[in-house]
Structure formats: structure tokens, C-alpha cells
Amino acid sequence: MALPKNPHYRRWIALLAITALLLASIALWRMPELNALEWYVESGKPAMTPGPISLAKPLQWSDDYYTVADLGHGDFAIGEPKYGQCNFAYLITGTERAILFDTGPGLHDIRAVAQKLTTRPITAIPSHLHFDHVGNLARFESVALPDLPPLRRQVHNGHFQLGLDQYLGFVEGFQRPEFTVTQWIRPGATIPLGDRDLTLISAPGHTPDSVVLLDAASHRLFAGDFIYPSSIYAQLPGANLHDYADSAHRLLATLDETAAIYSAHGCDRLPTVEVPTLTRSDLADLERALVTADTAGWFDGQGWYPRRFPVNERMSLLAKYPWMQP
Image 1: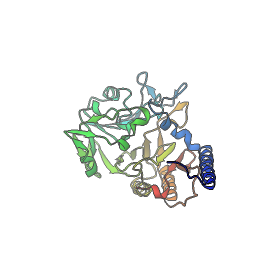
Image 2 (image 1 turned 180 degrees about the vertical axis):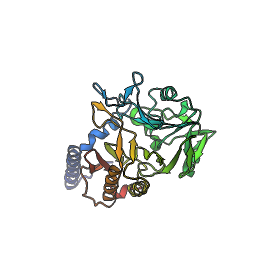
Image 3 (image 1 turned 90 degrees about the vertical axis):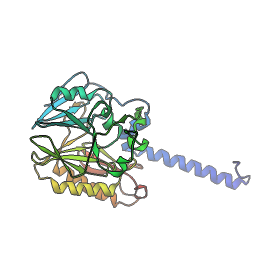
Image 4 (image 1 turned 120 degrees about the horizontal axis):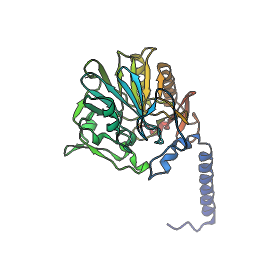
């Protein structure tokens, strides 16, 4: 389309273009969260952790990629500190069966590590369906998902097919995997392991289909990406601050002050990596930040986009603008 011949229009268009460029430059300059999102613009390759890595007890190397920590009560944390997002999955074992909560991005075979830790049959359950949590699901004979109608509709010809904005693997060059769902678990249902039970709890917010696992007897919550000690993402497709705050409120009501919360990411204290363990107090801090972000005005929060809200000394919340809520 040709520009208008009137020189006044040309000057206005040039002025608007310069202003937009200036505002964009200021926005990027003000964005401390750019570092947290830099893997988004380095698409095409998996993010990897630079430099040497030291492990805090009880973490130990299982091989040249995975680490393992025995958490007691038949629970094991399986970490990937060489991967840039420092994923942690959790093997929760009983006398009859075991659950692997999350499977990482799939750069290496997590099933082999889990099978070294238990002889019980393992069912893999992802906390949600982002690429860094479902990468190994196809390696398992038993895979369970929360029994939600939208997820049921994603099964075609016996295979679960991930949506593009549900998986998001393109940011690191991952191809969407297909896998078979062998069990659908109703949110709120009990998962018997033999000598112990887990409860699958729906916890939308980070994604619409996010779930957590509660072991009420041992006062442990396996939280996935619901809460973790770093910049917590509440700005990705499908994230909803109001649902997130409501989920945090419900989870707080289920936990006592002695509860331990095990998260899915744990590299906030590099070069030393530790099992990402939080408390009920951390969850209460997150709830307050979520309520603040959900009710914030246009100019609240730090940075341009996503907006950053403080949670506590180990966490911050990356949020959308109100008009961007689904």
C-alpha cells in the first residue's frame, strides 16, 4: 500500500514508527524477565545448563545425565541438572505399583533410571502437557491422564495428540510425540499403590489441565509446575490467574504447616543443584501474589511483558495483562 502523498501524513507515520521503536526498546531494557524467557527466542535447540554443576545432598549422579535423591517413604526425585530448565520428576513407590510424576523433555530415557529404583510396575502421569514434562511418555506401557473432557477429545485412532500451544516444544526444536493413554483418572480420585494412597487433584492455572499429587499420610505434595523456586510462568497460552489463585486457595486448605512441596524445577541456586522443596508458607506467598496479579491495574507489576510480581526471596510470578486472560 502506497503512503499518502500529503507530507503531513508522512511526518505523522514516521513519528509513530519512531515512537513505537523507542517504546519497544525501553520495554526490552526494562524486562528483567527476558533472561527467564531467553530460551523462547533461541528456538531450535534444547536449553542446556552452562558450566560445572555441584549436587546438594541427598542428590547423587545416577549416570552421566540424571541425578537421583532418596526422599524416604519410597519416594525418589529424579533430576536433569544438565538440561537448562533443570527438570525434576518424582518416582512414588508402593508395595504393588509405582507412579512416575512427570517424565522430562525426553532428551534421555528416564524409564531406565526409574526401573533401577523399583521393580514395581510404573505408571507415568504428567503434571501437565508442556514439552518438558511429557517427552518420555511414549516409552511407558502405562500412561494415565486426568479424566477431563477436553483431553478425552484429543485421542485419535488410539493415540493422544498434543496441541501446538499445549505442548510448546517448538521453542526448543522438539517434535510433538504421540502416546497411548491406558488410564483416565478422575480429579479427586485415590490412586492406590498398595501400602499407600495418592490423591490426584486438579489444579488449573499454569495450564487448564494441570494436576498435583497429594500423599496426605506423609504430608507431601508433588506440585509439578504449579509452584517452584524460580520465575513461575502464568503467562503462557492457557494460563489463567483467577483459576491459579483459586487452585492455590484450595491446596492451602489441604496442607498443614508440616507439609513438604516437591516442585518440577530446581536450578534457582546454580551452580549447586538441590531437590526443589518448598513449604506451605511458600504456597501462601504464591496465593497472595496471584490475587495481586489477578486484580492488578494496567501499571502494576514490573517490566513490560510478561509482568513480574514478587512472591518471596526465591520466587516471582510472570503474569499476563487482564485483557489477555482466556
